Length: 312
Image 1 (tube, rainbow, N blue to C red):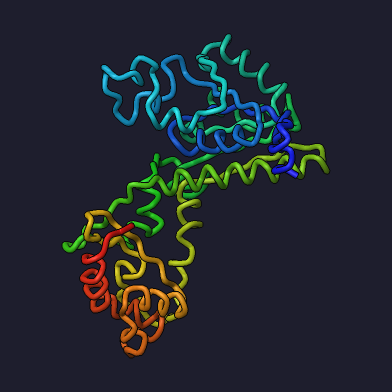
Image 2: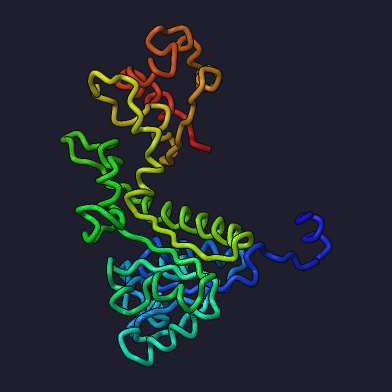
């Protein structure tokens, strides 16, 4: 019992303790996968080029800040917690030899270098499984490891655009709103950590490692799946850009509040809380579908009422 052990001051072991991970990854998706594995006890060794992971300096770090002196951005600090780091030039014979020695005693390798880079370095799956058949080899690509766009570089916003996520919210002039959240990157890291854990579990039965291939586009499509299902095969009708019961509203005190009332029961409760009981019986808002379809009428009603109340 975790709570009992915690209250008694006993040490609670983590499920991935004893698992050794090599992270040859930069930016967000790969390091976030390593972060999740490290959080659950894995020993993650981040293998960086001599100049360091690009995200040590990105987003912008003011040159006079403490972060600049530490050569770490806020993003880098978050995604690389609980890890050790080693700077290696993998293009040299010495660096290649160091990597092979590390692979021999590792359980997992995570890489998100441009397609074909690991093969050029002699560190692709086929080469490494010869020296460590139990190795779980996890790769991340932008738009997928195969197909006509496999060699194209892609980052989070590109994957979100290709998955249709950006089409869901637009400014009045039709320009898509770019989310401030790295949805594809972070979802990709979660999916990869999950896949690695499943492969380690399967390895207990077979004794053999496996290769894992995930992509930013695949992760973006996975989180966007509910919006991709169309029930009307004849045509794709124009959809409202956002549900009025899932938008931020500015309140009297200047703070914002997010509403989330999906079911009819939740909607009725919201109407009572806002003293808008008459809307419960309004045919325009009788069902969730009606409330979405008539969002242009519902939004200003909620906006007006919430503007007279504090958020707290």
